[in-house]
Length: 314
Length: 268
Image (tube, rainbow over all chains, first blue to last red; front, side, top):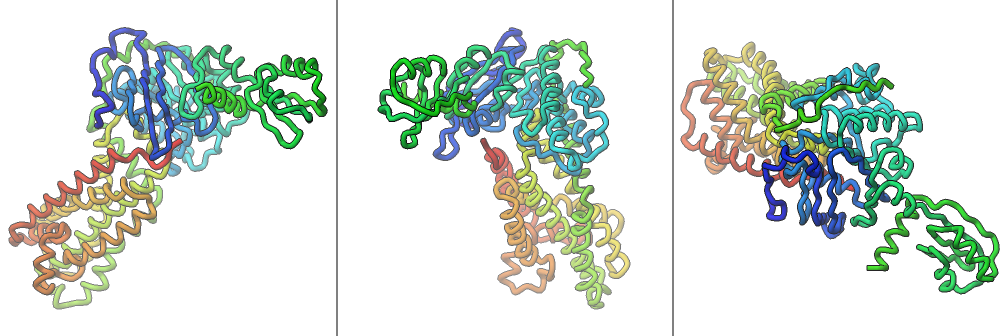
């Protein structure tokens, strides 16, 4: 153990019921020279359902791997139920679904469930677990023969095998069709309603909207926003406005709400939080333009603009 | 989708009590074995090599097979090789392959430390090593003069498995340090020279004196002589056990270090 991770304080686990389930304080994580997480602090309380939103490579999975004890922070502290997540006992109340499933292909569905359940003192009965995720008919199939969607459902089901108090889901519905996605969300919301704390990562806004009450936006290894679902949605929902114009670039950048500007010859592409105000200003400003297009920016673009503004402000 | 609301009191999670070490170990051993036997060819291939070597290189030499001690030396060497290769391959290559799968880092998030997983693997590897010894033992029993008493036989087999532990730890060290492709190469580079210099193929008693002397400090030689000693009831050179223990401790320390250091091969 390094000096950075202070050893677990055994008390405080069972005392206050609203003691944080997860506490991350000033966590840094490097991979060689690459900074994956840069001074991240976060605490999650019992019963919360938190969405971690951010583009690929933002550091979401790295943050989860610190919380589930797979990695330790380069500096800073991480606490799971008040203990060091790298001690096995701290993880009794934890269930996870990793981003990649990789179930042992030769084992049968029921065997994988029993194998995972066997690690926990009070597991969910196999029949109940399979029923919750509509997997009952697949009990006897080898996991290698399952479809991608079925594998994913099983992977999410496994996260509940030990009746965890905290569930970490890393992009749980990747590769699922709309119906499968909805069914999975329902199952997760039901489990949350029974009192569990849930942290879910996604780069689908729709998924976060369906599941989360609180949203933490991560980009470039730092927390860009940590707020209620509604507040974050309005922040990241931006529009892309494109048009041709001979107007000076700097003048366009001063239009209201512009968070990013790209120019390709006389073709400009602006990212804005308020496209209505921008268009109004563009028109009233009297500048000549043509070929105006307004469309919803992708979440990826919205994140990039969030990242850009914070780095400029810093 | 059936969504039963199960009435359960969340406070049941007070005072986390873990599943016992023994149960976790058996759990891991069980699924390790289950996974391996679903791919039977891997098990069969491993099973056959020492037996075939016995059949082609030892059985035709009547001067060896007619002598109980020389027979036992030949069988003991090949048996040691069998255990050594089972352990080095299942642990070196097996662990490296598992580590490349996302299921492995996932298992590391279970509330079980390194020990049940390692011990579970040891149990399953011992089971496979024992199975591999059966045909070798049968060939030896039918075609050679080797005739250990039941007590010697039992002691010999137990010694074989115990002498295999250092190689198992070496395998784990390789498996947790390298990718699976590198692990295959390294295991082979380690296995055959160690086996040869340890007198597992050609009896060490026929080595030139410098090699014979050097060989006594190798784990393969120390293991072989302890095994042959157990099977025949003859004396073993004095530093065999300390040499084997020292290698065992060294490899265990390396294996534990490599496991702690390993955080899975994939991130972000």
